[in-house]
Structure formats: C-alpha cells, structure tokens
Image 1 (cartoon, helix red, strand yellow):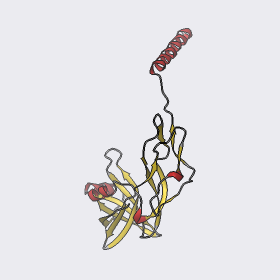
Image 2 (cartoon, one colour; image 1 turned 120 degrees about the vertical axis):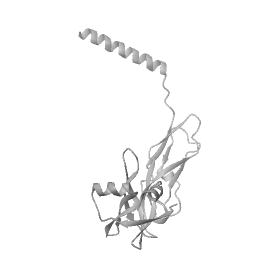
Image 3 (spheres, one colour; image 1 turned 60 degrees about the horizontal axis):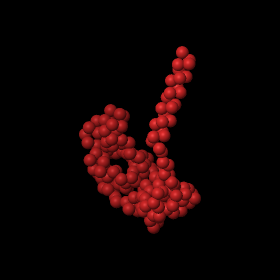
Image 4 (spheres, rainbow, N blue to C red; image 1 turned 90 degrees about the vertical axis):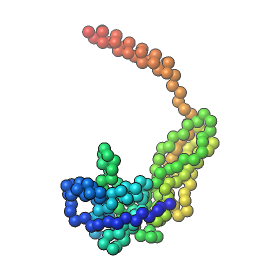
Length: 205
C-alpha cells in the first residue's frame, strides 16, 4: 500500500529550458502540482530525495511549499533519455478519502501445468482505489492451469477497497502448448531458399 514521502519544495519562478537545466545542475528537479480546479503550482524538489521517492509507480508525496502542505500523486515522470535521471514531474493533487484511477502491475503467482507455457497479455490493469491506500500490484494465480485455459480479469485478486476498471471478461493471460522448432529443419529450409534465390539470380543474368 502507498507510503507518503515528505519533501520540501520551493516555488519556481524562472522558466524555460535554460532555467530547468540550471536547476538540475543545482540538484533540484522541476515539477508542477495541479488538480481540483486550482492554478498549477510550479516547484523545485530536492533531486536525491525525489528520485528515491518516485522509484515505485503511483508514488504518493507530501510536499511542503511556503509552509503549506500539498498531498500529490505522481502521474508522470520525465527522465533523461541516456542518463535516466529524473528531469521533471507531473503531480496530481489528492485528498484523504478521495478515490483515484491508476494503472498497477500484475503479479503472477503459481506454476502452470507441466508442458504448458504462460503468456501475460496485460502486464498492467486500471483500478480505482483510495489515494492514500493504493495497491502496489494486483495478483493472478496460475497454479495448475492447463494449456488452452485463459486467465480473465475476473480472476484477479483485488485488495479490499480496490475496484477493477476493465471488463471482467478481458483476457489477462493465456496458457498454451509451447511451439517446438526443429533447428535442423529450419537450417535446411534456409539453405534451400538461399540456393533457389541464387539460381534465380543466375537465370536473370
């Protein structure tokens, strides 16, 4: 369930790419807090603490700015393409008791029947839950599932207070028989195809 990370922020009054780069060099991450019809609040957050706080999806933050606290859900993390450092955050204001829609990962438990293979069609699903009680993931159990069986959204194990936001009949995972490829036959086929192409080229000349 969600842990609330507390960060101290400062108002940002200098904008543009140059100002953002300068802030990051100073160990700060630009962010914007929005929601509930209020004007967006542009802030700078401490880079090291913030980076640690947003390692998990749907992180919940309490940000103190000028003596006022803002509880916010991380909605988007923009990262540097090469360094993968956090460049910017979009934060959605939330309140205790309020329910929000988020995407959560699916955690798979159990083993399918011998000789069968398992394929996860949807690694994430959308759910509704209280902002201060968001699940880290939801669970499906594939123990003993035979080839030909499907795991549906209705099979997902949801924590108390969490509601699934997709059709219960959605196929989340499939169980099938593995496709065996004879490497010898495959190589022979490739050689035959290459020989035929060579003959066609000679004929064309």
